[in-house]
Image (cartoon, rainbow, N blue to C red):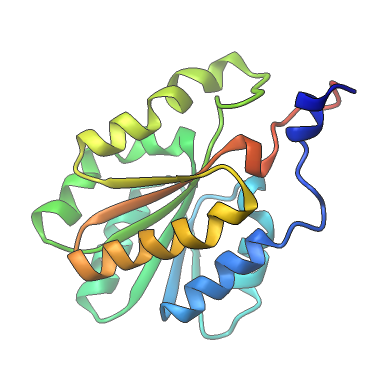
Length: 183
């Protein structure tokens, strides 16, 4: 196996999902909206196990935008977890937090990125950051475990302090490229 292939497989013991959970708790996040995603699986399990967090599984990602803006208006801090392919579903709804000056932090696992095997994931994966920025979202990216906490913390702080949509993109070098049995 070559060096690039090794870089695409995250260490099973990597604790970055646990550190994201700790960051959510430190920022008093109590609502988590998500469409199930393997890249977020460990973080999702941590949130589901926490009785102080309300976790809502969505049928489509844009529902999370409305839910979290409404939650903010009711006094709750929340975060939207999704895969980059779900960003395309949110485009029109991203005007909601901009118009109402409401925070909307998003943590996005990337597909169509480093080492992607599925050509259908590449167009949205390549456009994710530009599309989010075009809709007024402040975007930061984490590609190594050492990037995760500073990027997620900055993303949450930017959202809650400036009342804007923000996104932390978790690259495939961090989460690992899917291979479905291919080496």
